[in-house]
Amino acid sequence: MTVASIELPEPSQAVLRAARALQRRAERKETGRFLVEGRQAVREALAVPGVVEAVFFRWAAAMDNIDLFEQARAAGVTYYGVSEQNLATLTDTVTPQGVVAVARTIDVPLKSVLGKQPDPGKPRKKHSRKNVSLVVICAQVRDPGNAGTVIRCADAFGADAVILSSDSVELYNPKTVRASVGSIFHLPIVVGADLTEAIDACRAAGMQIFATDGAAGTDLTDLDAQLDRPTAWVMGNESWGLPVEHLALADHTVAVPIYGHAESLNLATAAAVCLYASASAQRASN
Image 1 (cartoon, rainbow, N blue to C red):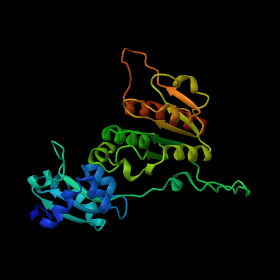
Image 2 (tube, rainbow, N blue to C red):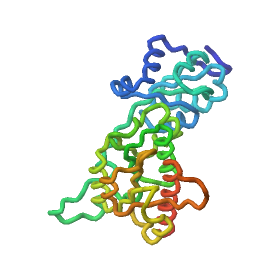
Image 3 (tube, rainbow, N blue to C red):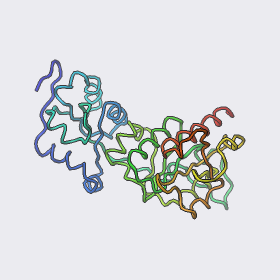
Image 4 (spheres, helix red, strand yellow):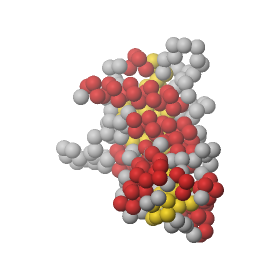
């Protein structure tokens, strides 16, 4: 079908069925593919070579997305035009933005984020390890909206990576992808990590470990002298925080001060406050 100056071929039923199936976690895991919805997220995905396999444009919204069409064509990505009804089967949002992509999952090993750890029996070479200064570790974070927003905050404040524990929400859950608004495509994210192993690896990479605890801990404003150091922030579950045994692995448990009458902050908001404090202190010290 032609929409103004855009040629948009219709996908076959087999192509549509394969894309719809990616709404199921089992299918995402088996194929290593997932759905990306929305203009900004698709734009970010297309900017990474080799990640996007196909883009579906709603015919009625094609002219509003001509920039994405040109980006997809320049990247050599397959693109299709679909009806509003067919696009609705690829998304669970009430008001889809008119564009959905199929992308490949991105494998990020823990070692690639923190760099190769030096052998204690050998002299350390200068620049032998990547300089990592700010990392977020999500422990038992189950809410996809919170997880995606934490990733977005980490991206906004210049974090080097996000690490998701093995018992956290799936990174490629459509709601997580949507909440990240494209940040998953330019921020390294480790999935399925063992929490203790991740904390140990961050410490071995020269990072201090701060764990958030809304009920207790050192007030964030009392850590000004330490916030400029390389830091891994450990964020716990939305409802019950971090288990005691994991809090014990941290150098400090940290509480975000609340001056008003709200009982607490949600996970994503607390993450934004802590990451902003670290990023600001690190930038000021450079």
